[in-house]
Length: 506
Image (cartoon, rainbow, N blue to C red; front, top):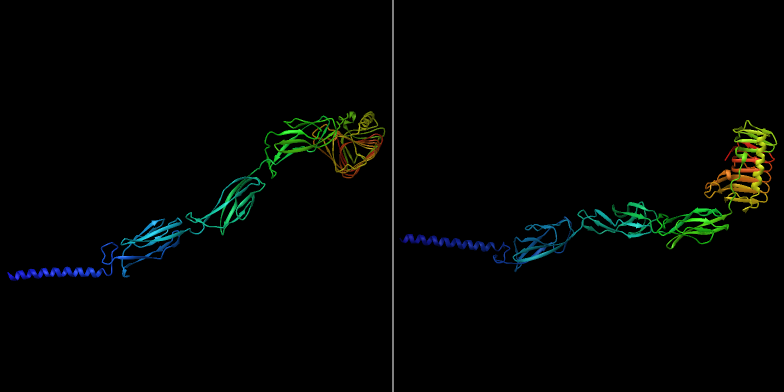
């Protein structure tokens, strides 16, 4: 019985000894490892230190490995397992590893580490990545001369704004731009795609500019000048343009007026009627819209004579009183009449496509009709005295021009019909006609209504392109290579053609 009791006592003592040993072992282990709990560790964590320290900077998608050191109150380093977390901002962090990975958005992130009720934060600035794109704004529509301040925004691959200092320029320029992106539209209208450019290194962005016509700046009135006979009418027109010369609509109402006499005009339509006074009326026809106007000059001339009847001369290209001579190479696309002479020399080799009448009744009637025509043209009252001046290089309106002596034409003489196909031009020379140049007809003027009336001889120089009816008392000479769209008619003299002359009825 005693032995049994002793055995039980020994077993109990053994169990207590083993329990004590476990307690001692756990206490000893607490010297090296403390769990992040508030009250279970034998030694309590009193400080946490994060490395690297706050603040930190990392690019988007970059990483930072954080570590923490935990210490007890006596400064002993404790082996702990803290918890890592994101307090604010983007990115991720391993809750047990402390490896931070930035997100794709630039900004500020705050992370925290917590152990035994102690929390320490670290601030991280996440910066944008390298520049990938530049966006230029706006894409404006501007009137000519209009201005626009452009802006450029750089971004990385994730769309984060990247600070840039771009160089501004224009390609296919619709205007100009300065170093700050301030743009001024030019005078050419249209859509200029991708023309404004902001460049940083090898990266650039563009914007499109549309330039439209600006407000009305000028009004142009046509025709200007305009020459009209007394009582004649002219429809004037007005065209509006902006400061760049682009045609723009004229804001209504467009009001027509006459400011310096010369005639009258319909205010709503611009139909002008020349008055009874002749002269030059400068800038008299005016078209006005608001504060902008344009004007045109009107020249009023006496009413020109009606076209003279030619009678039997209608088909005659040459009429001589004595002789018609052609050297060589010439062609007359009309009839040739001679009265009272009969000499027709040089056909051939010169060519006559019409009929010849030599001192017959037809030729005699032609001379009679020429006398009537000549006297009619000489008897017209003079509208403009030209003296002995050479009228080459000028432009003449329909009318009667007279000189007491010679009329000369050197170079181009332009005859302006003013839109009237019946406009008649009569040039009266007291002696001879000398021309070395070209007669140019514009605005419906016709050669059949032009008369060169001279009391003596007429000579047309080499290579001249002449137009009109030459009415002479004595001889008519057409030198080499002259073309005549008209007639060479002399009362008593001869008509002489040089080499390669061409005469065609008007």
